[in-house]
Length: 381
Image (cartoon, rainbow, N blue to C red):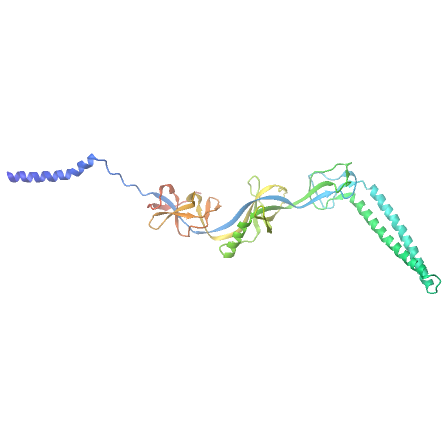
C-alpha cells in the first residue's frame, strides 16, 4: 500500500510539473508573433549612355536688322510698302520730294561746265606763254601766273565734279530703298511729313528672320566644369552642329534643329556667365524677334552614367541618399550626388558604382541594418 501511494505521488508531481508552464503561460500575455521580413523591389545599377544637356533661357533676335532713316531733308511724298509685309533688298519704300535736289544737280552741272571752260582757256594760255618765255617775249612772272591760273582752274574742275557727285547722291537719297530683305514693321512717318531736318529721321525697321538667332547665357562655372570633365576623359565631346533644340513659350519643342555658332570668350562680371548664339532655320517664319524661349543645348556624352528612378532617391538636410542591399540582403544607407534629371530618373554623379542593388519600391518598409526579401524592380510602361 505504501508503495502504491509513493508511485502515485511521483506521477502527480510529473503531471503538475508538465502543467506548470502551461498554467503560467495562461496567467501572462501570449508571446508576440515574429515580424515578417519586408519585401522590397530592387534594381541593379548598370552603365548607360547618357546625353548631357543644359536647358537655358534665351531670346530670339533677327539675323540682320536695318533701321531705315531719312538721309536728306525733305517732304515725304509717298509710302510704297505695306506695313508688316516682306520686302526685298532694293525695293522702294519712301519717295522724298526730289525737286530741290534735282535743281542742285542742274546747278552743279552748270558749275562744272563753266570750270571746264575756264580750265581749257588757262591751259591754252599757259601753252602760248611757254613758247614765248624761251624768246624772252614775256616776263618770267607772267609765265608763272599763267601756270598758276591753269592749276587753279584744274582744281576748280575737281571741286565742281565733287559737288555734282554729292548733289546726285542726295537726289538718289530721295528714293528710300530697303538695304536688306526681310519683314518691315510699321511706318514711322506719313506722307507730308518733313524728315531729315534735324537728323536722320527713323522711317521704318526691317528685320531679316530667315534664319533666326537665339541669344542665351551659360554659367561660366558650369562651362568650365564641363570642359575639365571632357578633358579628363570621363565625357565625350560632341559636335555643336545639330546639337541645339528650342523650347517655345507654350512648352512645345520647335521642330527644326539649331546650330551653335559661337561661345563668347568674355565673362559678364554682373552675371558670371558667358553669352552663346545659335542659329535656327525659320522657313515658315513662325519664330519672331524678341520672343523668350528656352534652349536645350547638348554638350557631351557620358557612356558610363548610372541612372536610377527618382523614387529611389530621397533627400534630407544632409542631401540625397539611397538604400543599398548587399549580398546578404542587409540594407545600408548610402549618400549620393544626384543633381541632373533625365525624364523620371536621376543621374548619379557620386556615391554608387555599377553592379550595386538599390531599393526602388518598398523603401518605407526597410531600415538600415535590417534584412529584406528582394524581387526585381519592374519599371511601369
